[in-house]
Length: 106
Image (cartoon, rainbow, N blue to C red):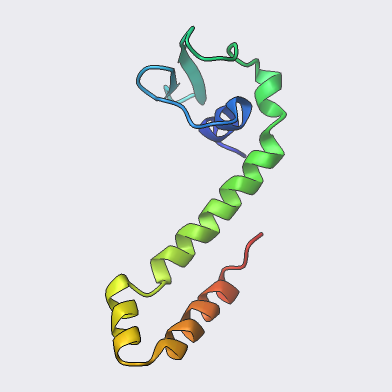
């Protein structure tokens, strides 16, 4: 199930400011929009409007998870510099490709 943040971001077509534009809250019974500023170019969405972004939100969050997993296993900048200086760049590329195969894009 896509998170409310993702669905609101898709509804707006952009990121938003948590402090001044929109505030999301969860009191233990599910997330909801606690504040929607008049300065936001679109009116506060209905539940139905947000639910229309469920599938697209799920896809985005799944892809974000793939990128997080890849990032955790990719070589560090220091390892990349050493690979360049030690002329072992092909080994580095092989490692990166193995990680991409381990965590394919969805």
